[in-house]
Image 1 (cartoon, rainbow, N blue to C red):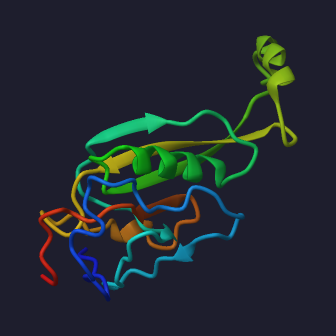
Image 2 (tube, rainbow, N blue to C red; image 1 turned 90 degrees about the vertical axis):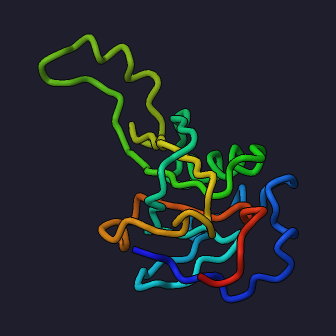
Length: 164
């Protein structure tokens, strides 16, 4: 589905891809805005829960493990901010348990690595090199409402036109 154009475009060069991105790289576990879909506007520098950009990815990464769920989100935001070609990112969060499995006791050796009662978070981080052009603001409708998908706009396309 198509996301609505931002409410305020301002100076098109202000968010151009040459400067460091404007995505938050730290915050509390509730430092995000819930994305409601239905063509809701996407704003530069806002982290959204439930927004999953559908534009093809330009790069992808897997984070290391974190004890809190937002760790992989802030890590992905930092990587996008530092990459001049990254305009938006999407991160899918996963929770896994490292510990013994009933059928394989060799996993017990890995139990030493457990933190937070054996729960660790990691994320698959996807960069996108379009936002306001080439349908880059489109999103996956079925991801709206998800508590494990986060996205943000870190930069504006240098050649973006206001509106659609």
